[in-house]
Image (cartoon, rainbow, N blue to C red; front, side, top):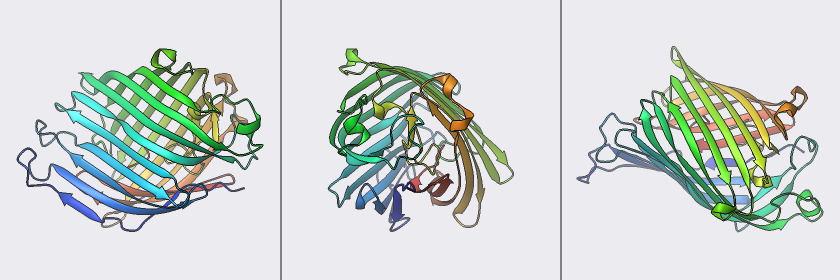
Length: 360
């Protein structure tokens, strides 16, 4: 069966753009708000309706040339009585000396599960229902120009409410199939010399994380997650070549919903997020971005990815790949924030994505 991914149809690209100028604490044009009504349809949800917003701002102590902070908001309700609420954020303080970012969320939703590893290539997948609050907190301190060290805390409290009768989650012994509390604390390091946070044209971004989930933080699952995410941006005349590599290594008692995932809006677009999952993952992708006219731009992209239970089992015969193209609509010129519309295509799979901000 051809994979079907979330399709978001924006009813209006820009429904509201408000520049606050009436406060004393924030000078004119230092904060901007954009609101987007949305309607979407997917196999998991039937029809859903909601709103999305992006608020960019600079704290009163920040200079006019400092990087803008950002808070996003998404809220939706579906005809299947599902709820999605998420609030990603990134706040810079004292001219990037401090960097706080993460996400708060609450989800009552259904997801597809296709099994762990590479043994389920022909499986159509099964739906499972889950309700969970989410906390993602990251705090970084600048130790030298463009280099940061800090802490990460992640929490999800999974309540799996429904599984398909006689499906893999119902009949097999899968870690995490009954849900459970996840709580992890770890260290992270970043290097970031990009010229722009939302639409970089040159520079590097690299993030390495070691996260330990375990009983010392109240979780019944004890496992370690290590990841490295590296992106390079190259300006070629009026175009941009963006390159990304991502590695993830998990070890221990790992719930199926915490395994490394291929697919989704950021990693190997074209596959459903989690179509392939396992303890180890390697991914390489590239994107060529170029302007069209007015506020429109376009991209072409492609990627390769692998999952396996061990590093030495990341084999060529299990290579997953997608290619695609997309449109960019500039909704906030000062901060270079785009709505992106991407179509990804791979072997027996397609995906359409409409989101705010770039994939990497």
